[in-house]
Image (cartoon, rainbow, N blue to C red; front, side, top):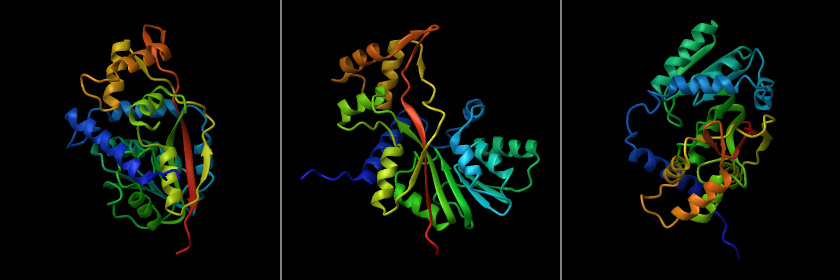
Length: 277
């Protein structure tokens, strides 16, 4: 009989690989977003110039009497979007650099119905809200069931998770399958969906209608090779070097003075109604 995957354990393992990589780069401790928050905000705003089915769907979930909780709010794109319609929005984030920009954006928009909480989830102390969203801010949390259970504790009506959904034939998926024996190089929708099922939660899924995420670029194949090894936690010398070099040479294309990776991600909105307490 085939062994059943422990999806929560797989999620934890991939988070730990990510944490080990950051420690190796000297990024542990302090605010990892201190030097990157404004660049991140610019990329988010550029992406938000395009229509998005998740945005439309979530905005339909609130009205003038709805309270909305934004977990891992970052620089506030979702917070501002929902605050224009909801009664009140609470934005939670552990990064001072992110929250500095979020507060600037709140002030610039003239919003009076937003509360900001400087804390990491699931430790944040917040009151129950009608609708809760965590958009791409769960990837650094090793204990996903605990993270989700806390979301449900403070949600009266509906929990929503927005996550990256890797394409089956993406470069990193192929590399992870060869090296790790499974196609997931990082925490993602597929793993989280199965964690929810194992928790007894049967969520709905809405795939974003914006198609595939923009492709990565690398100045050289050597840069792409080193970046791939970094993401997979491989040492300087690896038995997989030749395989990775061949894979990248085959799949990356040259355009406008850099190499372009093939698209590898979409985005999925997972949502479910919380049982009446």
